[in-house]
Image 1: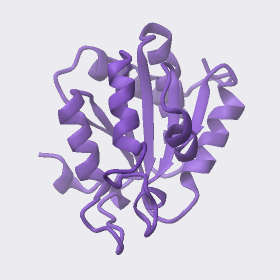
Image 2 (image 1 turned 30 degrees about the vertical axis):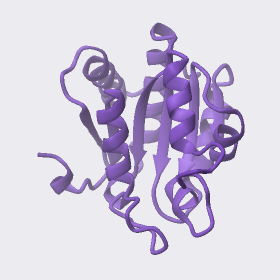
Image 3 (image 1 turned 180 degrees about the horizontal axis):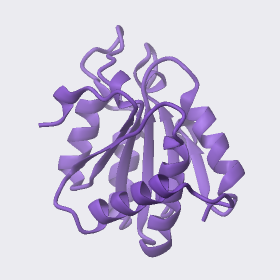
Length: 190
């Protein structure tokens, strides 16, 4: 668990996320909180508590856009949860997933021109690594950080919208998606 004390509303958010992903029927869950309220801290505490009780899981943390949000989030997890294993897209493509991993992936890095992360017929793409992990008994939860930016489509590969791929993975592997945003795109939720 995090070495910091959560505020009451943050604690409630963590408990609700745990409740929804463990016992809930929803496959898409929204964490809406204002900018500066600690969404990343909430999500990290949620991951840590979830993995304490669910040993066969791994998390895929997707960030849209061209920024370095995935690196910031990974660094925060590395600093606050030293007992947890974090990976990058390159780590996943090279070595695959293991139970208890959290993979931080910038969506633009997946879809940019020349990238082979989703390309068919490559030796091992992201889908292959997820399928291999599934065959090894690993279950997933997907987090889409900054959900309001996730309708982003790469100019090079517009068919790979981050929400569409997350929903495909959620349907294919029956896993929940947790969206985090201060200003969610309410058209996402129906």
